[in-house]
Image (cartoon, rainbow, N blue to C red; front, side, top):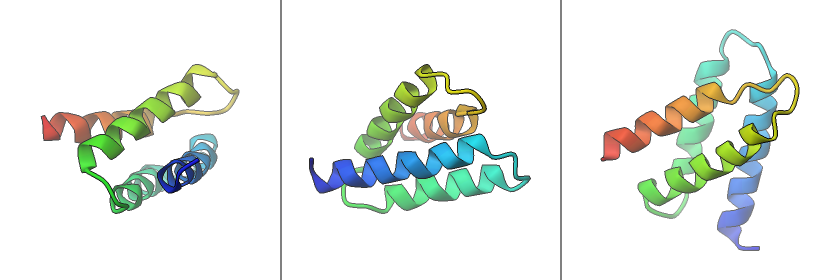
Length: 83
C-alpha cells in the first residue's frame, strides 16, 4: 500500500464519521476535509477521481445511518468545475 493509498483511506474514514453525524456544521466539515485531501501531493483531478471512486464504493455498501450525498455532490461539483 502506498502513502497515497494510506492518505485516501484515512480521509474516507474521517468522511465516514461525518456521514454518520447530524451536526449542523457537517457540510463545512466535509468540504474542509476534502479540501485538506486535495492539498496532498498529486494533481487535483486525479485526487478528486480517486476520492469520488472511494466515496461511491462506500455509498454502495449502504451502511445504516450513513449519508454520503454531501461528499458525493461536493466532489462532483469540483470535478465539473475542472472540466
